[in-house]
Amino acid sequence: MKNVSSNAYDEVSPSTESLSQIHPDLRVAFLLMNKFTLAPVSGLVEALRFAADKSFRSIQIYCKWDWMTFNNEPVVASCGLSVNPTKVFNLEDLKQNYDYVVLAGGLLTETRQPALGLLDALNALHLANIPIIALCSGCFVLGNAGLLDHRKCAIHFTTRDEFAERFPKVTTIIDQSYVEDQGIITCPGGTAIDLAAHLIRQHCGDIRARKILDYLLIHAEKPKAKAQIILENPSTYENPMLAKAIAYMRENLCAHITLKQVAVHVRTNTRQLHRVFLANTHETPSNYWRKIRLEHSRKLLANTNYYISNIAVECGFSDASHFILWFKKQYGETPFSYRKRRHEVERLN
Image (cartoon, rainbow, N blue to C red; front, side):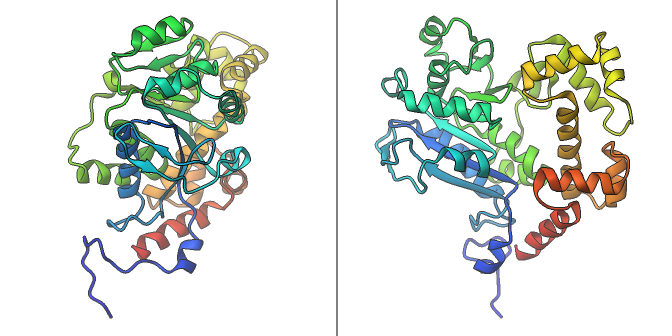
């Protein structure tokens, strides 16, 4: 048997058969525009790479990523680096097989007047509830698509004036490393490591997030109140009633309270609450609340040894069978299978 260093780059990799049984927790499609800025793209993908396995072999276990271009042709970064797409751009594939689509922009000459087909594709992704991340000047493309109207947008200070003039319906912010607003995430550039750490923590757990921060020599994140608006923060939504309702839901994950009680808490009725959720989140209140509970349950399955029955109660489900049913419907596997797979991945590493 070969001796394997615990921190070597040339460790023995899991077999192809073993890897075929693994379903990544975080799947990202990079959609590169010509003359894209390399720094935020490299920061984001390097963080994914270090979070993707337990050691440092760059195996896509916990995280998966692919490189695409809208016309399926090679692109050149603003620094001159040429990149070939590794996968064909396909809208249905993006909807079904990825958690995020990262639109990487760069020089404004390429993003001021994007192809109409690209704008249509981005709108289709948003309607399908696929979160879109715009790096650097990718926000200009989203602005042209109308996806930033009445939303907050993190913008680079050097392009704020032009952006504000072109898209007056957008609230521009220049002092945050990224902003998330209703399924649209904007990052003005830099290394994008704050954003990467947030995504990894949300989908893969604290251990993976700490690993990438330590290895990339980022020993402390910026204070959250100043650095970003994150998904868990109900104030992301402009509607005060919605924000208050979501906060109340998160505070009562394990409580068996009804939507009527939520409506009473925010001083409205269930019918109006339903309308507000559909208008702002494209989800019914019950679906949104269930997704919050299931998201929390997956973190508990990955990061604790709690019994599944206890997790079901902790996340507000009436019993374990009810929890298992909804978990499988949401994630395509049972809680037991998910936890077992995570433990098997740990052993592979």
